[in-house]
Amino acid sequence: MQLTVNIADQLKPRPDENNLGFGTLFTDHMFNMDYSPEQGWHNPRIEPYGALELDPATMVLHYGQAVFEGLKAFRTSDGRVQLFRPAENMKRMNRSCDLLCIPHIDEDFTLQALKKLVEIEKQWVPGAPGTSLYIRPTIIATDPYLGVRASHTYRFFIILSPVGAYYAEGFNPVKIMVSHDHVRAVRGGVGEAKTPGNYAASLLAGEKAQQEGYTQVLWLDGVERKYIEEVGSMNIFFVIDGELVTPALNGSILPGITRDAVLTLARSWNMKASERRISIDEVIAAHEKGTLEEIFGSGTAAVISPVGELKYGDKIIAVGDGKVGPVAQRLFDAITDIQYGRVEDTHGWIEAVV
Ligand SMILES: *Cc1c(COP(=O)(O)O)cnc(C)c1O
Image 1 (spheres, rainbow, N blue to C red):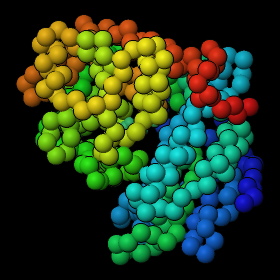
Image 2: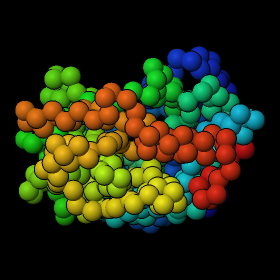
Image 3: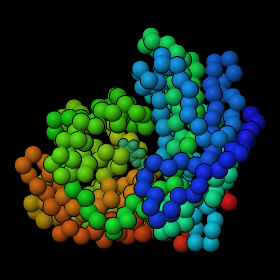
């Protein structure tokens, strides 16, 4: 396949790097590629950013057959642009495709196209502390058809958005509500895929949590409503009596790339790091015994997000006196040091763009 490039005549004014927010600004170009049963994936192209024209019967709008990814490009202090474990995103996208009956992409070709797009948009990778260029690869079902089946045609696109520092006001612990009434996903479903329906399913519980002053929801398993799964768009970790614990990947949890980096780093520091079932009752018991040392989330957007409070029914579990724990801080520093090129990458996690 030959990637074609069509550069925009008119470029947008560059935004103020100190006021980027998240996900509202988009760069000058995007990547597009189409799928048909006859041609497979074809016509890969980088072209000016623009609206998609879709028939109102387009299947993705009715049945949600779509997958996406999220990763970032970082600017180093000497002006290089680099990606963090992007091949893992391509691999995970194909695993999501399997669950949604979407044909596989060529991981190597797509990663090369993604890098080319970021290279063309390199001026859009911000350099202010904590900022980055967020990358959103997406595949949608495009047959105009109202019957329920897998689509025959698809569009793959990649858009880029410069994003601000997640911790503009400092690295502060968040308050999280444990959901009992609602569940996000069940084993055997599509919880381990990055697919839009999972996020639609999480909105109501999220709104209820917000109304009570909590930023996100911690999901319990969909069967027994007892075992911890993950937070909105983050995996979750506990430090209990010196042991780092995160729920095992059981089919209903999204296998986070940051989660994997956290486990790898903790093990390289000789911490005991376990992937296992952990119930909300175990967390409450550890809190009551005084052995619950830290709770934090992991994900591309925030990297590490310390949790200062969990609410479960009428129980409040306060951790760390409103301060960031040492494990969360060390992981945040280690991962961001690698991402921004402040330390040598000994794990092979960095891929240079320019
Ligand atoms: C993307 C995502 C994560 C985090 O994955 P990363 O690869 O670390 O960004 C965790 N949970 C859900 C539901 C997600 O969508």
